Image (cartoon, rainbow, N blue to C red):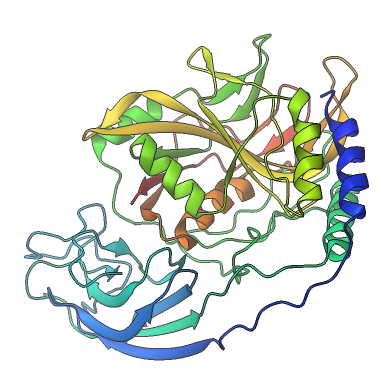
Length: 419
């Protein structure tokens, strides 16, 4: 990629000229609250007002033990549950509403984090339309981290962080980190994400990403959608038909829902003009703004280039290290909603392109980390209504991308229904 080194030099030169430190604004203290939720069609008022920027972390457990105890993850064979508020989740699953009159609850399950985008109020309930036929309340712990205006961080700190990220990637020690601007996920291994061991890829240093526990639904994927996801191509390709990154996630929602959700989750649309990238980066640096929209190469799915490319990175580390993905409109819809196929990887440095010997980006071979990071970012932004893992009948578990870099995966595709 011809823009990589010139853009790196331009960024470092321009950003270095603006090195200064500004104290961060004061932030309200985090707090915790315990709530008991009775599984029923009624909603429980937590008494918590929500403000834009707040980070909400919820964990839940069954309050009793014994036979036929209600489970916040939901129960597969719960009779007489009535019409469910959230059809895509199992009966009895713990749900939340962010507005009193909202008719679009979100799945919580046993654990979930999300970021508030609009002011509201937190209500908890269960996925039931009739009296519960299981027993016991849910003991729910809520941790609130009040939001604050984006703090100004010194340019020296940003440059130091960028250098550390780049060195870590070049030495093969990268771990797929939590998204910038969100709380660090504690890395709890659960039934939803069993933390499969990395499968070494030939000629590639094995890096194990930090575990991310996503609040995935245990309900089976709808047969129609399962058929559509199964029919998607497993790999993207470059302009020379070389197979590349795996298709590792699917979004369900309109184009506006996709754009709004990704913007709320702090993803940036990649610039499409390489020649203009250096000038734009320098201009933004002189205005003391972070350049987070570096162009990405064009890859193909369904015979055409990506509809959108999105990326996220620590300021100034964008050149060498970034979280990024491409999405394509799939030739399928589900209940009137567009299906989008996505391929996500994490750039962690530079390496030689085995097609032509030029410099290209090196990806973290543990690609499942980036798949789950995408899900986590949408979850924390409050834009993921419900998520599922789907394992195709022909999963990709070890291969090489179009530039020759190896990668490995558990083969699962993350299916995300957007709010």
